Image (cartoon, rainbow, N blue to C red; front, top):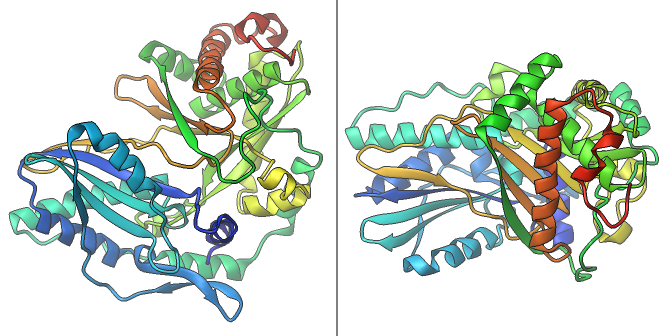
Length: 431
């Protein structure tokens, strides 16, 4: 296994089947769908990408991945009335996936004679956001060529996920990278300073909830303009605003939160489906006198440092803190920020109306994940997944709403000290 796969596999052993790493890709399809062509299409994708027909297991005491031979794929099918669809989809994405058997399970939910929902359930150990784009693109191409009776035109893959894992393990970790992170996580502060609404059950993992945050086109344009003015990326602007929010809610002069970074970077892996990303912490310092411009500059330096040393797995960083078993969960990054600025090709299938849908996860990975997805109108949709056994929906709505307000204020007045923006955050403790 790759180091990242091994980390998730070990976590699943701890959760004993209650994996927090179940992902999904789903779309609503209206019209006359050729189910046989769809099954063939998914089968071709699974055959093309070895990781989708790979067992993650143990052999001779070592974690390994074993590639199975290509085989036909059958869609698990069920029917349900429209009113029961949300519940059915939630149950599907919560179904356990045994990595010792298969990392993928496709479902077809028939809502009416002319409407279905395709749900592809996947384990995060074989997929990342980039891979979902590859999956979607190949699904459109293969289904279309099958329907039209044309041969597919897909370039052979120069590398498979197993090849990547072998090369990664052979290379080992750079001591300079390990040393960098040992200093960055030493005496790390708590990640999420928002007081819990309730202690939550002792059993893990916890239930997940979802709040949708809308950042309109005007704010999206303001963030991109601020990025140009401050000579950085929109992600850095979003991250600096998250640091400001956590600083204002907290009591320490330091904040820490996580963000996923890609391990891709060569043409050999661009078209490959696999789990080629790592979670890295961003640790930042602020004070009442710090301006957003200064915080953005510091965030940019922190992001560049993290990217330069991105190959050390998050599980290694957690162990460096010596706190991995505390409270039964990982304490290093309880807040995660994701910014998806990828230019996704619009999903479409010939003769059908197809629409991507996003299904909320069943289990919480951490206290709060804010995933900002760029829209065609220039704005962003924030899918905010949170620990619903600890936080009320109203609390998360208030916190993420304050984040939006703080972001708008900071990009409009980047030289104003953070201490003058206290009115943008209402909290019982903190500053």
